[in-house]
Length: 246
Length: 346
Image (cartoon, rainbow over all chains, first blue to last red; front, side, top):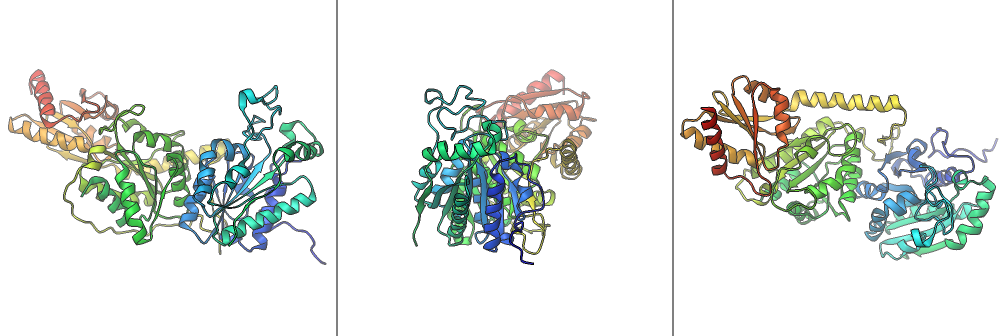
């Protein structure tokens, strides 16, 4: 019998706690597949965030550290500087990375810290119950922007991939989405490229992955995928924003 | 050698080859020393973008099982409290140095002891303690750095050295010490799971029973530290009517005053807590059997006096003398002692 699909070895047997239709599960799997295929599981140290992925240390079958809110890039810096030959990744959401952790992510990138960041952007705070995020789109209703995000009150959504691509220390910056199989495969390729960037010691790498939150968006999983395509991608264009050559 | 540099050199002797910090007066010489030294000896120096980042870099680096440190001063130590709480819960060994200045707010850059409460009560959120050492000389800046790393490893706890800005800045001759580096278990470290199950460093406990159990485990460890690591220096207390209690540089100033007043025939002694947490309460309680009055001398508005009162437990009165921003000199302390002696008829 030929095995055509199985659980990646880099994921544990633990059941995900994520909501129905949430795309964290897909992204976890893509990252785990990349770690498996590059045979890096035993060299990998992952740092998880505060947010929906706070329990990711239970899901990834490698050494894991749980960081304070927004501080994962600083924790990863400490690990990587002491263990430069190991693969070090952070897994962060938009509140964690683009709001409370803005300082840590910008400076990790500016230093060219040789780490890989998986940045899950679903335009909302999930775990705390659907509050406005720095990436919340104009007009988007959340529990702290109940009439829709207004420019007058909250300014504009932050475009992290574009912002971080400006830094000389950034070696690989891409934005992908997980709304359909083609984009999921592109996301996997980008994650692998980001890890390769780290292996080749080129500097900071980050993949921003547009993701859904059906629960806090108040949508069915299918409606959520449509929203990602119709509303998020036009504001957050997909593509590679920085690819440092040899 | 300058105090801050002696401390940095002590850390290197203890095998600390990683420093993460943010500049702040009067601690910056420690960072500058490491920035000069580490490139030559294979150490890791990172000037972090913030105090928050610095302490979280320490969290990450300590997770690998390496000996690591950071240093700062009052306002910076406040910013680090989030990370210190995480490090304490995750039971990671490291050294945190507070070359202290006066607060609150931005305060000033003059030496002070006004971070006593912060240091001895944990400082951040949650039920935890860190071990706090208070050196009183440039020699001890070096010696306690070596001691701090051993205690940190032995109990898997963040250790703080709290030294007044004066100690960091002043110069004294020192004897170079060799450090014996004990071998402690590092099997908990996150270094990649080759040949073993994955290690997880985590401070989240969503189940109430699990969280309570974690706190009980930490509490048991703190009790063990309290039983084994309380340190104090007792000076001329056996026949003393009046016993001064002072730590750090203030204890040296008080020692001079005690010797001066002894020449005048007054029976005065001094207790110098070396560990601020755990506080050497048993030494103080024993002395309270014979002493008639305690005087807490601090460079703040009266913080350690609360611990002295708890130790004395109402047996004898405890009074306070302190200044802030200005360090009391021996003459001032002498005058205060003589005033009390005259009033009390000692």
